[in-house]
Image 1: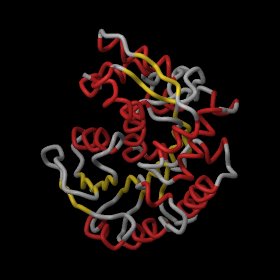
Image 2: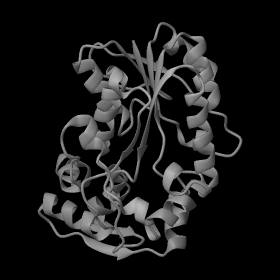
Image 3: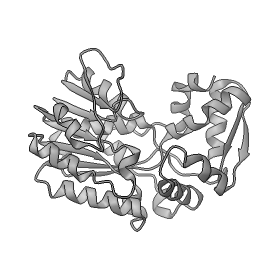
Image 4: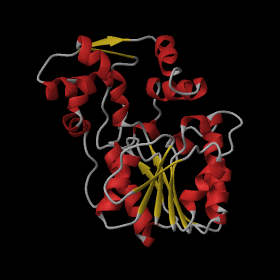
Length: 279
């Protein structure tokens, strides 16, 4: 049995599907009731209460750990989840970390994630760590305004980073959960190209077959909007990276291709597959 947390999200959903299609028994965990693929067990649990996860962990051999937003907040202790996994006989944990642990190690949220990585390394469990950069699916924040007004409002329109398709993260996670060769691996996951927000909007417009206007937001305007869906400190960290990416954050990593044997998908591919959200 493999447990997938965050199973209804942009990474967890394709990961759950991939594991089920590979013939593995899967328990999909999310905070609320949700539809899952045929043959997959679903359990509702709140990761801020690790005891609520124990029914899912019983009998499981592997865990994909994706932290909910509130577990990035000050005072949260996600290390308890790793302890619960070990206590329930889980042998392998694949942790979704963040590229910033390596590229900007001093920020508070990244210090906390580094500490969690270290807890996992020292847990006695088999482990792999995934460190993605920005997600292509963050463009879904724009879907409502594209549908209603054919406009995208975002900061730093001409500053790009090599964002990654969550489906690629899911495929790498599946490989790490299923293949012993990836035990002890730390993988930095990026897309195949640096692309700006303005370039992303152009790709969405091309997939729509309809023009989409780009409107530049100030940093303060963007932070106010982002803070409605994530801790303010995490929003600040994200904006710092998006507005002033350093050379390490502009690097296109070979790790997706190392694990999957193919190049990562470009943003245009993600936009074409998800264009229904923008219509």
